[in-house]
Length: 222
Ligand SMILES: C[S@@+](CC[C@H](N)C(=O)[O-])C[C@H]1O[C@@H](n2cnc3c(N)ncnc32)[C@H](O)[C@@H]1O
Image (tube, rainbow, N blue to C red; front, side):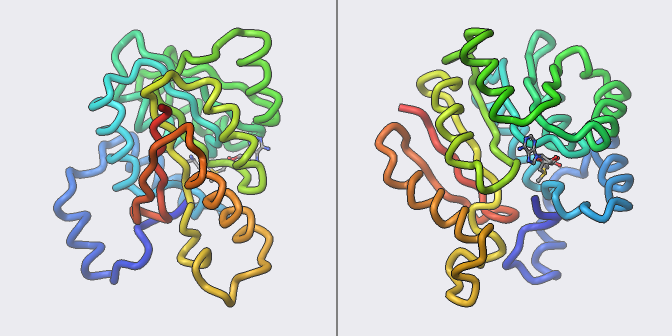
């Protein structure tokens, strides 16, 4: 979630975009279509999509797990960066939003790489672990669904990602509200604050929190 990196003034943000490779055509078109949706601000920022794709390539990612698809921006950005035999497992519970995603995956020629699980994410994750035996199978995971369930998704990702693999967690700064006493008590802000406290104390990972977009934690499973 977040249409641009927060905390940067407009001029500096524009400069950053001007010095980032142009948003590829299918992603730019998807952003334009999603802009019509009242929930458009759930989409990740273009620089974050570019960063995630670069990261996927740097890591030689073959299998990517995504929790929170929306209209498909992050899944499309990463799928384009995977090799021909790469796989995206994408979890969401919204048929309407993922119908948009499916259309763009098809148009971009990456639909064959992407398996969508349309259900509550915790149920899909349980299926991946308990029924499909996918523990330790993923190189990269991205948590970007309902904030209250981040701790649940975190545990599943630690199970599903291989040692040395990476878990990305979105919205960890929540527009700066996590550090703003005026927002203490706000349920979603508290959920992120609780999660951030848990993650930094978790000895199963090494992590860094980056102020890109709405804050992105990168956690390497040890
Ligand atoms: C912030 S958006 C994801 C944005 C997406 N990564 C992108 O790049 O555009 C969050 C998504 O999580 C989904 N979601 C929320 N709660 C969920 C749940 N309990 N199970 C599955 N999906 C859920 C919503 O339907 C929504 O599409």
